Image 1 (cartoon, one colour):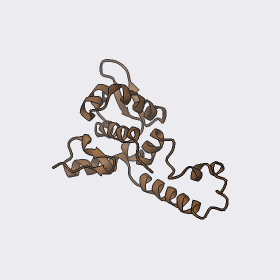
Image 2 (cartoon, one colour):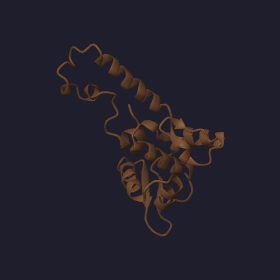
Image 3 (cartoon, one colour):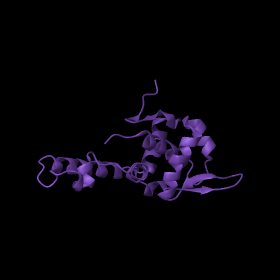
Length: 154
């Protein structure tokens, strides 16, 4: 599974929102500025998160985004699956009909197992876990997140 840009940016955005959980809504402009993400692209990303009920919006002068559930109830898998409809390592895992050999393929069981383990891994972490770990490690800027995890701050 390759983590695409939409997932990376979406995770950064929702982590910023999670970091303010219980406080004021986070304006999209604040997320765009602090995360250095195009506002137009960020609107698409938060739209997907909103449709998945992971975040909710509040309009008005003090408007912005808040989490749709507590950060302890939102897993990384929730975020990833909201932002990427192709999470399986190969197409035949989710759609066996795409391959003529799916029924007797020696490697399909490996891909299916890998898919299950990846889901298990991603569901093992909540937004609360990440926010807490980031605060404990002293990461003040969520821009330090990259496709492989938390980047070196040196």
